[in-house]
Image (tube, rainbow, N blue to C red):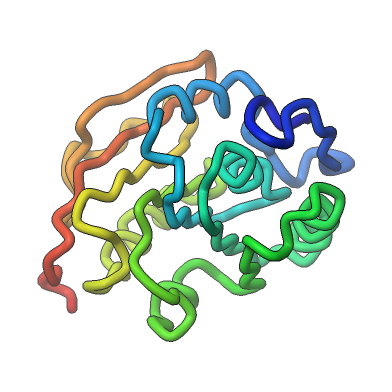
Length: 190
């Protein structure tokens, strides 16, 4: 696993031992940042279910002003912090070692609205997506935010979940990136 482009291009990242974590592949990360394009520069990036931090570190390498990483698995948090130290990116990163739902409930942890939200929940945890979207509060996302979910290609996400609608699906082998359009107004659940 390595950083693909930007100021830290080629930097090796620590990956997991065994199969507990499923880091986003270099190919899918390259595709993600191709989809996002120039939106990454100077953005506030939220990496939910961050794992080893490869996606958020790629965002920092490509010019994101800050990345907030949310990950509840202690082993993954350890790898994430190690990767941030190795790349000397701790000053532009915030790590929350909590469950995604808990982070979304705590507006005081957000800082300000995010311009890009990337979520890669465990493929088997499909119930996480609607719960996560329903947990969004006004102020989490900026007005023109991009939201991307990574899921197994065999999984069909609904076209609309509350205040989020799929704009496009990008398939890369057994992985699909789902680009959502999001209404940033208060949801019915708020």
